[in-house]
Length: 296
View 1 (cartoon, rainbow, N blue to C red):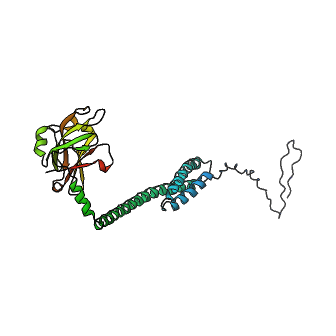
View 2 (view 1 turned 60 degrees about the vertical axis):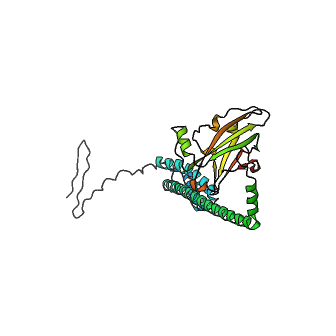
View 3 (view 1 turned 45 degrees about the horizontal axis):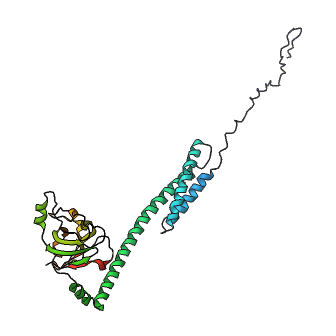
């Protein structure tokens, strides 16, 4: 059977069906596919790479003495590069997020290791130095004893000035009038604010005459030292007690002027017996200017 449209003003598609032949329609074509525009290309981060390299090198060198000072510098530079690299990576403008974090971590660890090793090495060096000093002192002391230091001690004892005898100390003629080996009661009665001694107060009373050419202040120009039997020196500068005739209150002396005053020293009680008293110029570093006086 055949169908046809005849004499129509409008033309419409006509399907002609032929027996035995199936009718088929072509499906509509799909819409065209457009690929999305490519995203921005992230640049490689040289800062992140440099930070990681510096952090690794600093960490490797941080264990080596002396060289780890250079490692600390590398670690600081690695931190300085890693921080901006991480900021760029988080903004998405550069790659290297993981490398920048790794660079920061290695740099921080390197700094911590440098500080720890420096402290450890310093402590070891101090201990070794102290041990060497002790051994050197021991050897020197033993050698001095073998060489005959005993006669020298006898000579020193022979040079001790007795009480009441003047001796020249710097620009002063100094006479030791008395030495009170237990002056705790004197100090306690001199001022209610005086503190108790850590050991025992030793008080030396001096009479001085200024022999210089200008003027002198004996309380500041002279120093009193008690040389204990424990091989320690106890200076009047370590005694803050106020005395009845305190040296700090001694007047300024013109040539020929004299004054009597007291020095105090805080001495360990066990070191008093067998000790010695010396008077010396305060601003002198020459032991020959020191004069020893009898203490009893």
